[in-house]
Image (cartoon, rainbow, N blue to C red; front, side):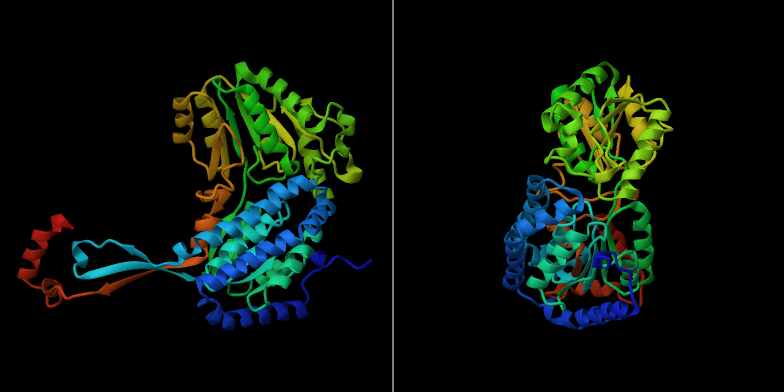
Length: 482
């Protein structure tokens, strides 16, 4: 059987084609960079309409890739993309306009501004877990900023990759936006090309390789990575609210979300109540009989056998080290079904506490004092997200002031990702740079400072060579005002 195009390795012919398309985009960028606001908006609206036109195709593709529920597709793949396109189109004129900035004493007689120019030809390497949102949302801001773009979707969601290619080929000419499918060797070949910016979403391990490749060409990068995003349930928390929001954030997309609650730190006196509330919430979401959960059309399955076996190892290792499965059900290798699972008494040395889970396994640990929870978080690399459940504002602020994270929520989960006025991104091992909406526009733009001399200020000539005592006296007089 012929492999799916998304699984095909890079051939010499494909490598030559990619290099040729890259060169054509580089030459064509002189046209693209000077497109007006109206022209760029038109492209964004066409992309938005194409996504809506392909709604059923997108749903079918994601169901084939990992049985993603259709409504969840609408909520987490289609709605974010069409919302992003509309929001960016609506605000693009304001963003593109040169920004006047104030001057100081040292710049008397001038005015200054920041101009926003595109970076050039950019590469988007997108993941499999939210293939449409995490491909098309950065593409929207790259186009808005005036760039040409090459897209490499993940081979792990082949049906989604094929649909992405079909949509983009309908909307764009390859001199502006091109899509290449294939396995990791295709991405490696693309990374040999001298892109002006690379936008990567994926694991920290691959992110380092992308950064190394970018460094060879001195290309800038946006790296949206991951990590173990903690959730603190303080003793003042509303337990039912916490359970509902944690269960939603954790089990959406089958737990395959980079900002999902990775593990929970709960005050010891609320532990049992939280476990009971999580059990009730899972029953509310997926039904009372774990034997039928695999048939539930509101729950996604695992993307492939390798990830299924990885999760199985994390689960079995945790049990072998003393963890208890307090909520769960039967696993099914034949359709890669992993049930929503809650584990308690999980020791730190368990593998599940050492790596990002990226699946529907929720380990819970307890603390007696808030400082213990903060110490546990700060011992690990800085997470992509951090969630706090507390009704005491002072304790909430204490957590925020004594931790660091890419983003997060208080008394909710996930919502910071698509807030129109907020940047999204990690810090340290969880990412480099910010993305989406205005911050995505900035990521794909060169902020070019320009100073205009409006009239001469003769006194400044005193500070031109040759330097003398008079210049020094003037400097000493004015230095306190600088």
